[in-house]
Length: 64
Image (cartoon, rainbow, N blue to C red; front, side, top):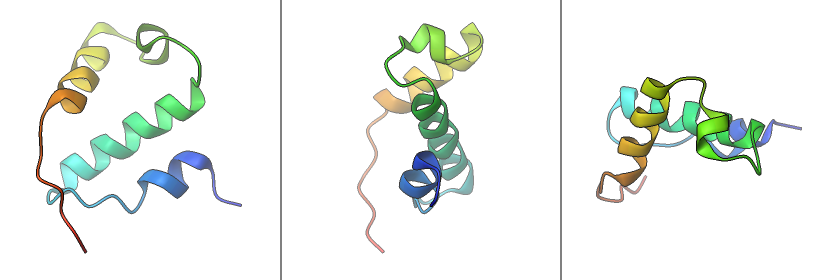
């Protein structure tokens, strides 16, 4: 069985490979730190800030 993060984020298509990778890494970190605060899930201030910025940025929904 696939790991939850891989199953739910690996096929993410946001129109840019970097965005896809960022979504996958955030999803994976959140799945591994389920129930924890963001500040506990992400190892440093830079990673925490980038995750918040990614999640707060509005993007059009792309369909396959």
